[in-house]
View 1 (tube, rainbow, N blue to C red):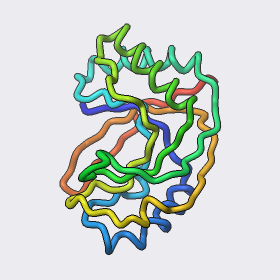
View 2 (view 1 turned 135 degrees about the vertical axis):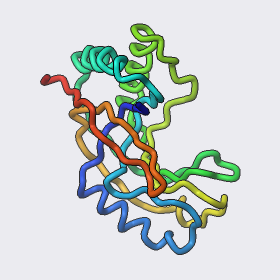
View 3 (view 1 turned 60 degrees about the vertical axis):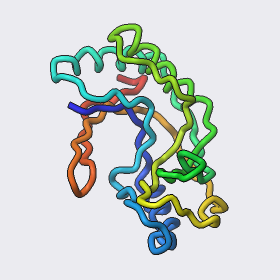
View 4 (view 1 turned 120 degrees about the horizontal axis):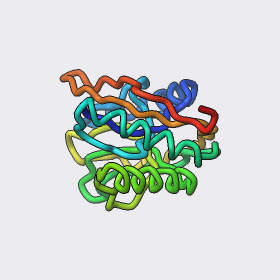
Amino acid sequence: MRIFVAVKIPDEIKRDISHKITPFKDKIKGKFVKNNSMHLTLKFIGEKKPEEICRIKDILKDVSLKFSPFKMKINYAGAFPKKKPRVLWFGSTCEEFVLLAKEISKELYRKAKIPEEKREVIPHLTICRLKEPFVPEEFFKLKFEYEFEVEKFYLIQSILKPEGAQYIDLAEFSKCQ
């Protein structure tokens, strides 16, 4: 089972993002993320056996008990890597998101030996996976600010299909559980 931990984006923000990127769909060669697939990944875990999922849920539940809701702003456009980009995204400088991602990664390693993330955590919402590295400069100059309250996070299964990934919620975590 291919799994990851993520924060979901409110539907009204997904719709607005979709509207904002529409003019680029004719200019950029790539696969744009569908509204129902938009999320902010806290930790990609990868392939795990079904019997390992219960342990991962327990660890995430423990993390959620220390978790406090926070406001998150998504307010700039970026790409990975910067030279010859392959992924376009909308990003955030939300420190609380970074701290939550690091805590999840640390606890999953400490209690289940799931490798910690070595790369810097850059909170981002994937917009498009590029087939060619050309991106119009105006994409990076887009002006927007989406703000929402992060009150919970999710363990999600990702099933890869030719038409795009299908996501299934396996568990929801919040301080209130």
